[in-house]
Length: 249
Image 1 (spheres, one colour):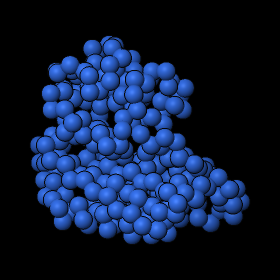
Image 2: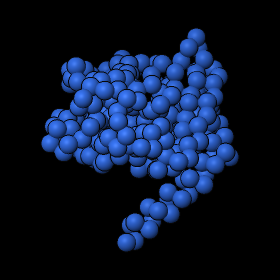
Image 3: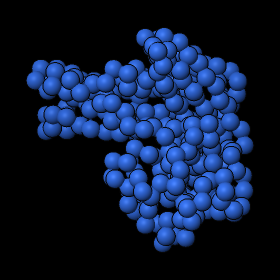
């Protein structure tokens, strides 16, 4: 709203928080080079995820993280935790948690890398769509700001994020659905790994597709279609029903 009323000229967001539909008159002016998209594990004892004892309590408010943690280790207790990064780190002690899972990008940007116990492999914890990338949003018709911001755009990051977002948009998912996606580019080949999971982590539908970088969005859509056919549709419909029931209650 501030952009549309010209109260501000630039808005900076975490790309993973951007809605699928950009308001009329606005655009993604630039995506700077992406920071590490991984999630990190921070444990109070310094023990890595696989070595934590059964019954350990891990704090995260993300359904995506919770589902994948439960899928990897059903013997863990997942506890919802909110607040900014500093607040969550303090709650690691004050709420007697054994560990936290956070985005690597946020931890690194606040120079708190020394707190990290381990970077979680995407095979264990697939990142959120757009995680680690920043979005610089501008007005479409801004002849001054537009070109200035465009110089910050990183072509590979834009292509990868476009593919990830196409995957998410086809699934019609948001931050309240356990959907994950991670794209990479190697020698002009775009590879996307995507995942849809039950909240309890009991069922995980995962797949991978690749092709030319210029086809990143098509690859994202095709992967989403494949996962929907393999059972993701049933998971998403169940989650929508649960959401409606919770709203009504």
